[in-house]
Image: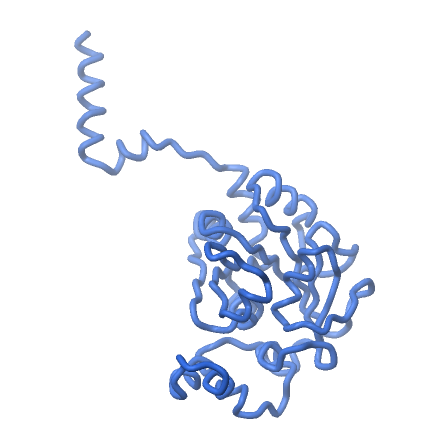
Length: 249
């Protein structure tokens, strides 16, 4: 990764002024990096744990959610309870069986066995040599638009927006599978375990989009008057009249 994680952290927290700490996510494909401890939490809960300053990971032995484990490709031979969303109708009344089944069928998951664990740490406290595959920020809609949309203004790639899938699918599987930035509401459980306020969203930025965030901030400028003049006929006419009047004077 060519981007310095501490520089990215500084830009996010000091220049963009996101209120919650950015979290570095590592997909442990072969080994779990030194300095990370196992966490008996729901998979998406490692975001909150890392926000609090911990370096943690979940794997097949250390976790507290079969759904998250399945979306991470860490639950072989999963039963229909998970794979077809039967759990969604057994503990709550608003899901129909067909909707629950389609929810899981349409949700992203990592290929089975592609990782052995998923790790998270504060972005400014990742040990040297540890790969950062993505950064997750819990933030308001305005910052979500800027962060998830950084690639759209630098290379023209629109981000993916998700409402409906489990948080673990949206924030961990979709960004890697689709190689794109994602903004997502997350599901009720994901929002609860990560203590999202009503107006907050999850944003996941994959590593190949980090530079776009830095470039967005470095080149940020906006001239409202000029924009109105360029695209709004009423303002363009007023601006032209003003130029003509100045020339007449």
